[in-house]
Length: 386
Ligand code: ATP
Ligand code: MG
Image (tube, rainbow, N blue to C red; front, side, top):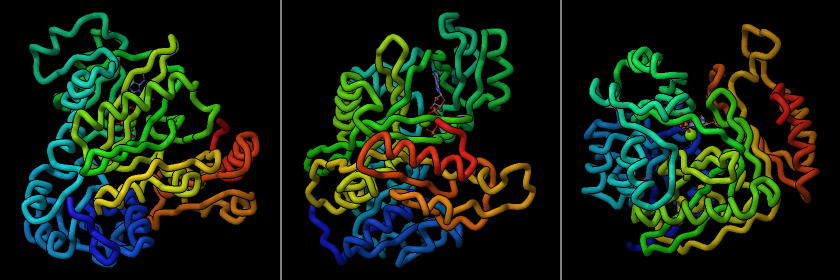
């Protein structure tokens, strides 16, 4: 892989908040950036040197992005494989289409985890009547998840027993699905891994995640957040999964810690992840700088966490507190009055419930202080305590 020095242009497929933070990291290091996203007001499009407004499958749009860019990455996993394939004919693309295709499909993803020897929840692939009928009783209670295009808990239905399975599958419009056994979770955590074109690999520390309503609500990263032995296993598993894909880029793996102390892998995202946002202020190399480095072929150094961190997601719900029917701006001055708070807003003009509008990272000298500040910020914003 050739090294692209600052001054080159890095392209990204997708203009959401992940693309925006990638663009910020790239520009800080002296790169030019190009974003492809159909939305005129997309968070990354607004801050990029180039914004190609086109559909992800528009051949001219893709050619324009490739024309601007010296190398191209992606900020969401549902970029059509055909688009990545077209780009790859003209420019280096990382991660590659093959790895993205696996991450796009829960059935392929689980097969990959099995190949790497990392256990996942017991599951069955459901792609038709025969498989629906053949599901074993031991999988219930279960969650039915569409194999493709799910995010933030969308495309998922809980299924208490076999009797409910058919109705659940109909409600997902008989899409190809995986049916997963519901596991007794003690905790959720994730690991961000970066792997370079030369095979070098580094990772961020294990991140403890709290989901509410299927959406990430809080991430904590400090020595006390996950038992050390479990954290070590998660890192080892994440590295094996990246290695098995011959992955180039930033990859985030989500895990469940079960009540019996075992670790199972949930899913992976072929890009930086919401649970890694804390690294912008809490580590000396952020997940977005890792994405820049892997794409540009720059050296990877092991990031060092220099502060305990808590990240709170700022969902659109915070604009509609106490039954408000029109959006009310949350108390940003009240939150910024707390030492160690770092406010990120993604430039989305319209707040809607469930929409990721921004996040708040809290850093500080010690875990107790950071947690106390994060709880105070949560209270000022109307986020439930954790
Ligand atoms: P995202 O893309 O936002 O991470 P998603 O829509 O892809 O989410 P999953 O990560 O599969 O969905 O599941 C969302 C959440 O649902 C998990 O973080 C976990 O809290 C819960 N969950 C999912 N699968 C299981 C399971 N097998 N057992 C228990 N809880 C589960
Ligand atoms: Mg998930």
